[in-house]
Image 1 (cartoon, rainbow, N blue to C red):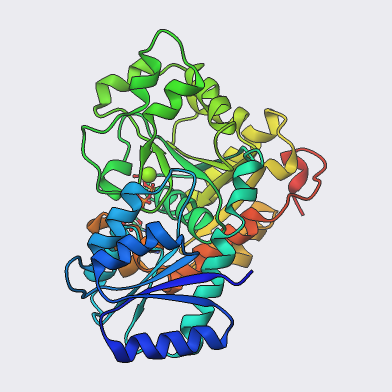
Image 2 (tube, protein in one colour):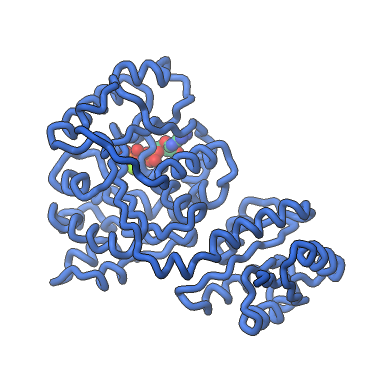
Length: 390
Ligand SMILES: Nc1ncnc2c1ncn2[C@@H]1O[C@H](COP(=O)(O)OP(=O)(O)OP(=O)(O)O)[C@@H](O)[C@H]1O
Ligand SMILES: [Mg+2]
């Protein structure tokens, strides 16, 4: 059956052009000339995808998208592509926040429009099948070889990419219990629920965990760190493994941003994780720490494939290149993420991760490659971490 596309645009020329282009490709097309009609036809026609102009009479495109997202059932999601005349990043972010999945700046080439439609239909069409299958429940811990190497940046953006690009159901846990950064990086207030709301309940069950998760505009769910450093003490070493087990039954991927300490809380997380990504940069103190971390993981008897090394800012000039670093560690670096200070810092300061608002940057592409490698089916690994040396 042909996919049905709802076009919401008040310009008769655009309507005609889109109708022609889409019909040529074999899609069914329904046209609405204003926002209110667009919203009504979404309910009446149940389109498979919506092309939504921003500047519309009655309700504008942002309002239509928000209304649809507010009213659609939690198990369904109609993909929306915003058509906008504006190039500004803020407009783009506003569109994405309102609930759009993609956007196109007018004028655009029909081939680009068709490519984006195909990709979104592919991402969302098998949703029923995806929902019917049990979650993959893979737990990925991100651990910095030292402070400030970019662990949080990588964990947040990988989580968003796994959801938005691979269509996975993803949650992100801020396990920096005292000084968690996710509220700042993701522009969320102190009033949002946190892990404290789970651990202070008499019983931890899956319904409680589900209720405490905070939805982010990008489509991922968050388990936030306590709002203040004092309350971090309420979280004990045995809490997180219990919570992680519940999260496994709800999500395809559980990404955990771990702080630097090698204490019981973090060891519990490593134990529960399927993969530990040790994030590093190419400098001597990181190399020293990575060696110690690999040794410790080896003593703990973790299988070789459990620990992956991620070299962040891999092309930054530090005097130590990838080969040198691999030579010093006597093992390969599994993943690399490029250096793009401006992109990383401006995303951070705007509270909108680059994978959400600027995925087409070099840093966004690099992160996407990393997540593609992560999302590949696992190959069988043998031996322990100590045996991972080349
Ligand atoms: N690939 C990158 N290229 C350029 N700058 C980056 C990159 N990744 C991270 N940064 C920058 O490095 C700084 C530290 O990043 P981030 O907070 O993610 O690190 P962290 O390891 O989580 O730090 P902490 O130890 O405080 O938790 C930020 O200013 C961030 O913008
Ligand atoms: Mg951090």
